[in-house]
Image 1 (tube, rainbow, N blue to C red):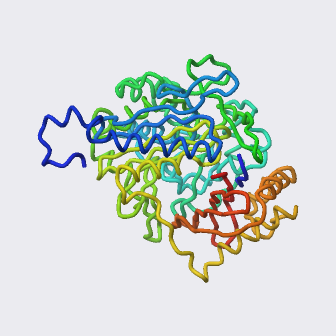
Image 2 (image 1 turned 120 degrees about the vertical axis):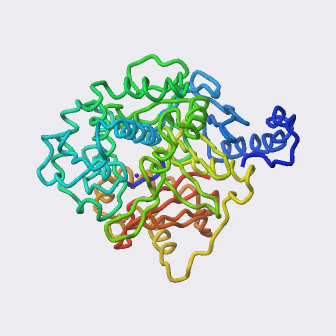
Image 3 (image 1 turned 45 degrees about the horizontal axis):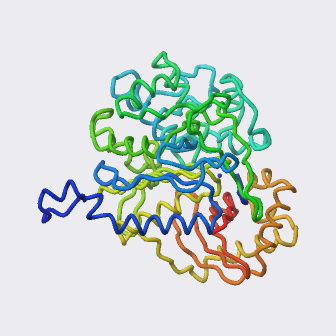
Length: 470
């Protein structure tokens, strides 16, 4: 995983005959530029395979695969290659819950304990809405050391629930926003209890089939799945097989599989009322309002933010072996879906780069790092500590400190040391998400460069620290 700590349409002036020629005439030159960009980025980052779809107003204008879905078998990646979606799964889980609410089978204001009576009494004030928008205060099981050291282990649902129930609340419901995989696991259980069907069956009947998504399904480790991509990671300069997280752990928080072609169909149906009524869809991507009146850029299963003046509704996913991103610039009727069979956050960077070819305003723009922010100096200190083999204890949040084992520290140090002396840092992006401040840097070394993604809490401690080869 590299180093990670636990985390419009067409102008009306065109005559109508052009509508049939849009993919060829209007976007042909752009497609060639995107091809060149993706291939260059894959070579630079040592990415095995990429499948992508660019969609304008619900119609794919570019849908392709690049590189290899499986390196050992030399299988090419295509638009129909099957990838782990990771946390993009949350968009489907949220939709399932809102379907049940739309039919009056539950209310977003219902207490979680109405459906999970064995949950702790302290959870009485936690509602379904709190789970949807990550404001429940429940601790995410992906921050637990037991999860980090046992990702390949199969869990029963009762075992997972017991693990989640045992953790004390981190804050009062609605008080703060904190990304939470436990909440979406619980939402999957609620879907099953309310609908009387298993999670995958409900999604297949109510979402996948109406959307025409024929290849999307729940991951099963032992299943033979035609077109399934192998997942890879990079250790120093070597590409290796990634450890597989047993799908019983992510479940409704991140265990779906899909293809670029199917995800383009998902994007198209979200412009219609075929599954959810349009006012309900708008609720999904309305920013969350906290108790103190402030808002956070996340709705129900979708992140919401402004990028260079354009509204993006999207979600990413990261799991060992895979990186995914779905960016929907709904006011511009442009969507970019990128699925990558290597971990490290490459999909979001690729999606941002691709979007810039269709809407130049979306191209990533460097921003100035304020001299008093101190963030760049903390990143430099972390890099120095890794290279010198020293602990970053003073710089890390407690949950990250527990996850960064001596072996991982050594791997990080060896990787960064192989790049030579640190030469410069360029701040590419910064944003505030509730209590977290997120930054993305390009860090140049004597023998190469990396993209560094970090997030800091209120105490200026790293809760995310990720270096991915550029």
